[in-house]
Amino acid sequence: MAIYDPKSLKAEEFINDGEIRATLEYAEQNKHNVELIDSILEKARPKKTATGYVCSGLTHREASVLLACDIPEKTEEIFKIAEQIKLAFYGNRIVIFAPLYLSNYCVNGCVYCPYHLKNKHIPRRKLTQEEVKAEVIALQDMGHKRLAIESGEDPVNNPIEYILDCIKTIYSIKHKNGAIRRVNVNIAATTVENYRKLKEAGIGTYILFQETYHKESYLALHPTGPKHDYDYHTEAMDRAMEGGIDDVGLGVLFGLEMYKYEFAGLIMHAEHLEAVHGVGPHTISVPRIKHADDIDPSAFDNSISDEIFEKITACIRLAVPYTGMIISTRETEEVRSKLLRLGISQVSGGSRTSVGGYTEDERPHDTEQFDVSDQRTLDEVVRWLMQSGHIPSFCTACYREGRTGDRFMSLCKSGQILNCCHPNALMTLAEYLVDYASEETKKVGFPLIERELEKITNPKVKAIAKQNIEDIKNSNRRDFRF
Image (tube, rainbow, N blue to C red; front, top):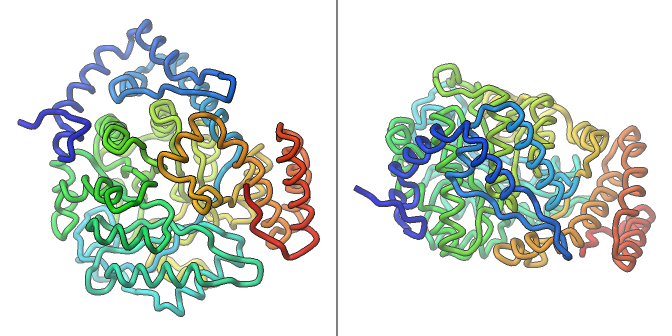
């Protein structure tokens, strides 16, 4: 029987079923232990220091106790602390990105995804490099600077060479004042050698959703194809880091398995990365299973309510305070609005989840990976964020200045990252307003920038940011960054 060891490189040891079950039992036994709960909440609370804030984070057992706790006033306290942590480390900035689907050819049999091999009534499509260029120009014309590329797993149709060609094409396109400055990659688990190739291609974050940490369920949900190998999939982040990629993104698909089990496994995975590599996940995504072609989410009996979903998000923020948290257009405007105050720091906007979807006037549905609940345009999302008191950020400076991995985390933990992020967010927002925004959005955005500039405490940084924003308004100069 495998023994729990967060420093092990074996999936069954760092995501240990026995430890998760013991954790869930411990959480159930202590979910009304007010003294313990209060001590955990106090540990999670951000502490002010001379240079900023510090947070201890929580172990998977501590965080699981909070998730299990059903005392209403304690839940409210969890929510308040999650908001405090988000503001302490990420301020009121929300990073904007869009997914770009390259190919829906796939050899796997995942029962929750319409791209599965046996689905014969979904059209299969793979973008040519010319089509990739057209999609990227369409995204640049919206105002996007950051993409997450997506592809099914198919070694014949979507080999690593195809992905690398697409990345090269994306980075090469300069259209008007537009440019994609960061390409994150969400593709199937692969080899150390291929991760090295992705690193050399200049990717940002490597993202891979576990889907479920419950091995028995994982094997049933992935009955055929290379993704059936639970250990190879679960150990992918270690290979990615061995290949030089120091920004990796975790996530599970909530609704496939018992959410408390998934939550414990997710936090254990973050602990494992910290224990082995000295740096936790750069991002954690929180998708829920949604309707799609050939997929009925009601067929899965572990779906979660909005209220539980909110609590999961808040508890992740308490447990892993320095990670970026991502919510996609799978969720409605109402749900996304609630989650923004509970720890979310990145949102997608104007997303299309079909292959070749951005060049179509009407949203195509025949090749969508999942139904998009929030179908607003990027301009509408940007305006909504600003009207809600947030700064939409198109910043990619940390990645291009080498502030990745443990360097990013050390700056974040010391509070110094705010000296870069706040002015960078305002300068990239100014670019968006000048180049792409509607008049209605500009009327909200420029006064917001003026107010937020005054919050910059360093006089030199404030003066440079103000001058750069004037240059953005009055010339074609772009891409200023701290």
